[in-house]
Amino acid sequence: MQTILLIEDEKDLAGLVTFNLEKEGYRTLVAFDGLEGLEMARQHLPDLVLLDLMLPGMLGTEVCKFLKKTEKTAHIPVIMTTAKGEEIDKVVGFEVGADDYVVKPFSMRELLLRVKAVLRRSATENEGGTTVRVGPITIDTARHLVVINGEEVTFTSTEFKLLQTLVKRMGRVQSRDVLLKDVWGYNYVEDTRTVDTHITRLRMKMGEAGDMIKTVRGFGYKLEAR
Image (cartoon, rainbow, N blue to C red; front, top):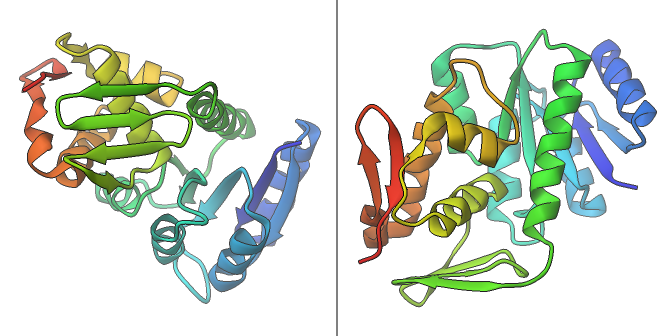
């Protein structure tokens, strides 16, 4: 049974989300402030964290930063939930390592679809065990490990999946819509900024190798070997 940690200070909403998650067969843990949620994530190592942005004790962005920079918890996917829907807030969420973003008020159906998509993506990354090398990039799928120019680079599960997808389709242009479907697991409506934000983060983390990711103006991206 997969475990989901919900960090949410609105107790009525937390109860509703918990009820629906458990009805779908998930085990749930609940924390009502950021510090408590961070400690529970460290202790229980859940399969997924549903994290509110505005929390007492510690903001969701700070919780996410701590999770992603700690080796023990860096692999745990995070879906950020917030009442804020402006583009800048989504960008901030992704910049601190969130794997997905849901704006309140959300339907339970939408939330469950996103939970399933992120968990499915995470499980796929851990299946089997292959090593792929492209130029200075080495990807070990079994260990969720990326080495670039001899140095290990840490990626979130979504960044890892995006890089893996570009590597598998090296030289072929991938539209933003295709990447949204294949990496995130379902279609976003008018949300291609999500792809652009993650591409920017990939390039930054890859250092000099980041220039292997080429922008095809007005369409999407492709990876080219050096």
